[in-house]
Amino acid sequence: MKLLVDGFSTKITRVRQELRVLVYPSSIDLSSRSLQHLTERLAVRRREIGTRW
Image (cartoon, rainbow, N blue to C red; front, side, top):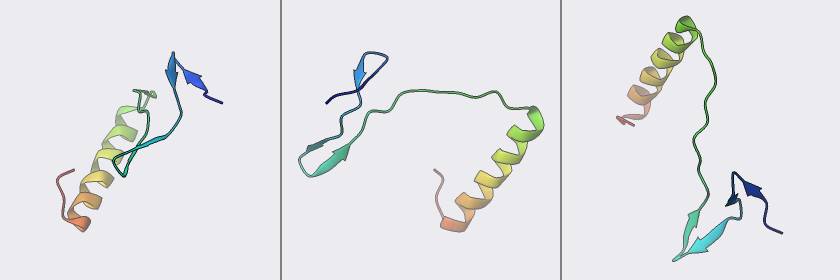
């Protein structure tokens, strides 16, 4: 059974031994304070694991 989200299949498929999943944009409203807190936490986490992303 294939479920559809906005006309796209949510079925997970394997292609050349890589796992591919459907990704679609979503958003939530955040206050400026919450957004700043999240930004700071992400920056700390990126420094901990040593990556820009």
